[in-house]
Image 1 (cartoon, rainbow, N blue to C red):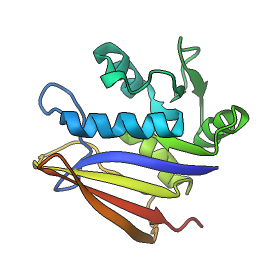
Image 2: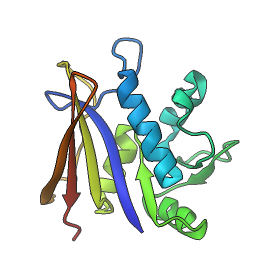
Image 3: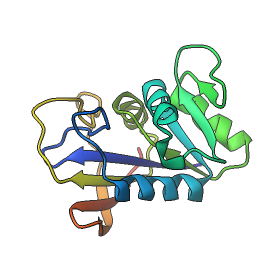
Length: 167
């Protein structure tokens, strides 16, 4: 199964999230929704799932198979996986050939640590931040990438699309 990680970062490398202090632009949310609909699925962490369902998430989850990476029990409206490999197995069993990993930072890092990311969409948002999580690899881990393309979302967000070399 091919896995695609979709993340938004500040220009100085912090993972961005809609938390009341900073918001993700509507064109980035619309692009994310297009990726979810194209894949027919999304893997997200519990906090991201709760935020998206509470705010409506721009309708991104509508009709998609949602897998929540969580150690807690059942979550209405979603499949639950404890590990990245389990999340991919759930989507594979449901007939998907591509898995979209949609955040948050802990979920993204778990897939990167496990070497389970084939493609990466990085949205560079037009602001700086002084703190927050980073898109992290395991200590000593180095992953080679190849640039596939660069586009803009709206007038201020650059989107970088990479292919990752899996070990």
